Image (tube, helix red, strand yellow):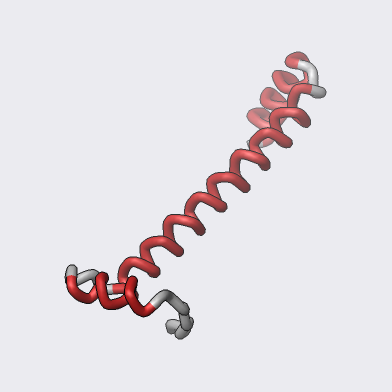
Length: 74
């Protein structure tokens, strides 16, 4: 499913894009995809940083013990 958006651009810019064979819908779609991808990466980096801070508070000894217990159970 898709949605329709409206973008207002100066008439001269639209005419020049048309003259150069630029398909505005493709350009806008790619720009939106790129921006959404950038935001997802930004969110993932922030989450990874928060996890890093959380894991830095857990000792190596506790991590090793947890892994060994999980192996025994699984």
